[in-house]
Length: 231
Ligand SMILES: O=C(CO)[C@H](O)[C@H](O)COP(=O)(O)O
Image (cartoon, rainbow, N blue to C red; front, side, top):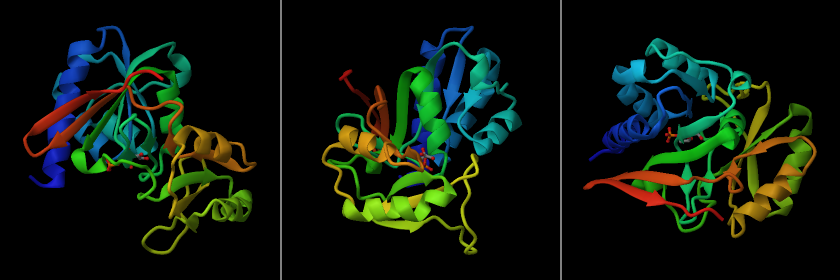
């Protein structure tokens, strides 16, 4: 199976999970990226059963609305039983690197409100230790070089995210992203807290304090379900 086929498979599994577990009057949190898009597509025929959604990016909002879902503001939501999103890497404890699609800040905010974080991915995203995928860090533009220097002191090699045409990538929140290669993240919770603390850092794409509760991972012979115990 191709990686795209695996994403379709896990998108369907996540839709089944939501239809089985989301209360009928509840709001659903939806992540960003190609795997999250497969989930939206799989859930679309059942949109009448989803009262409303909260989106983690403008791209996801566009896709949800095009598929006929109602999208509401997180400020108008008191609880969010389930949040479904992809990941760039996930370890055996459910800690993740996210933000390859640039939506890390809103993803982290929506995830922080959710009762259950369901991580959906093809099996290639599972790693022993986080850090092979360059860690995205969203920064206020003024702080870019100051934060980059600190990341170098930690052994990382940050680069400013650019579009293919060379223009600067700007997030939905008007900030920039540093993608940090070369990190060997032995203590995800500690490193998340450390980087979060630096002035100018908006969000670090380490999801360790709020990690996944459930993983659905597509591999050649089906979808594996992994429950990550609360820490
Ligand atoms: O964090 C994300 C977006 O900010 C995505 O969940 C992550 O990049 C995975 O994307 P994909 O499903 O396209 O591989």
